[in-house]
Image (tube, rainbow, N blue to C red; front, side, top):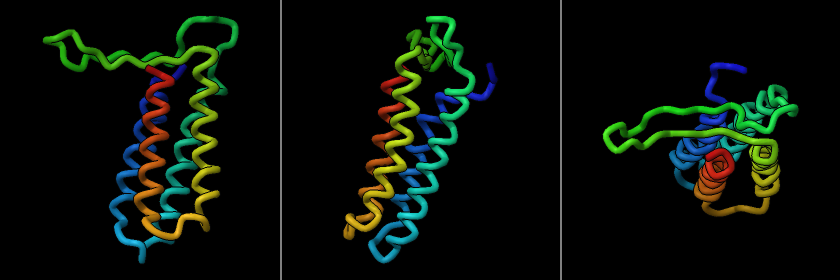
Amino acid sequence: MTDIPLLSLAIWVPILGGLLVLATGSDRNAPMARMLALAVAVAGFVVTIPLYTGFDTTTSAMQFVELTSWVPRFNINYHLGVDGLSVFFVILNAFITILVVIAGWQVIQSKVAQYMAAFLVMSGLMNGIFSA
């Protein structure tokens, strides 16, 4: 396995990228919002590729586990991991995000940055659901 926090990246790359897309602002920057959203979606998918290549199918244990104490006083932890089913959901979600950005390229004509940002943030949150 690797020391790179792949699950955290799969969650936070789309979320932070969505906020960056939102910062592009008005509809006159729509082409930039579209390109940036596509770049973030592709980056989010690339982050999930090592999850597929590094996943050990011979065990049923949780893999790519990340455990960090978040609020020690209350014993609250940041704990992520994937099993054999959720790893495919994370990868599928990242791939579908690319397809949605491409599909919305011509269809979404107003509030482009808001649409793309909302979908990227939702994608990151879905990855969080699948790996929590």
